[in-house]
Each structure stands twice: as structure tokens, then as C-alpha cells.
Image (tube, rainbow, N blue to C red; front, side, top):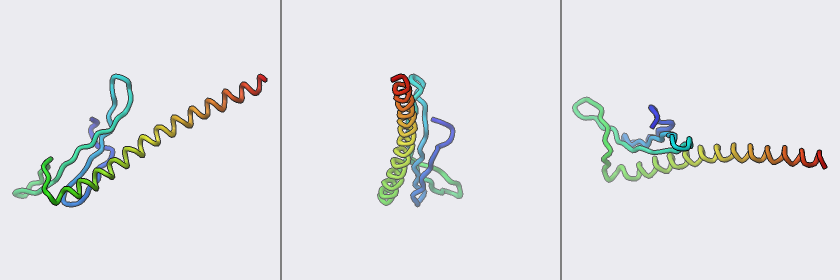
Length: 101
């Protein structure tokens, strides 16, 4: 994982979902992971836990949905950029074929 999340969704009550962008060293592709935690104060100090209470569950659902939407939007942008590049290559090749014809 990178040093900092690319997105943190706060859902209230100290509940957060953090999205991390990672790189697969084997093939160079990017992928995303999500961590969940809850902040709480004890004896004047802030702590984090990966344990959640019953009333945290709807907050987790909200945070996870937002994280999921963000990841999809990031992957859509990458796919759109790739497809536009592919389309531009096809147009260029098509124009070259017409010019030769």
C-alpha cells in the first residue's frame, strides 16, 4: 500500500473507510484496497480499532458504498482513457488506409 490513502470517507461516529491505490509489481497494473477503522477517545487519547459496534454497521455500509463508487470511477477513467487512445489509433489507421486507396 502507498503511504497515504487516496480517499478517506468519514461516515460519522469515528467510522472511516480509506481507499489505497496499489501497484502489482508482477505486471505493473494498479489495483485498489479498502481499510476500515473506527476512532475513539480513551483516557484523553485518540485510538483506532477495526472492531465495530452494532450502530456502526449502517455507517460502514455508507462508507463502503462511497469507496466502491470512487474505485469504479477511477477504473472507468482509466478504461475511458485507454479506449479513447485505441479509438484514436483506429481512426489514424483508417485514414491512412483511405489515403492509400
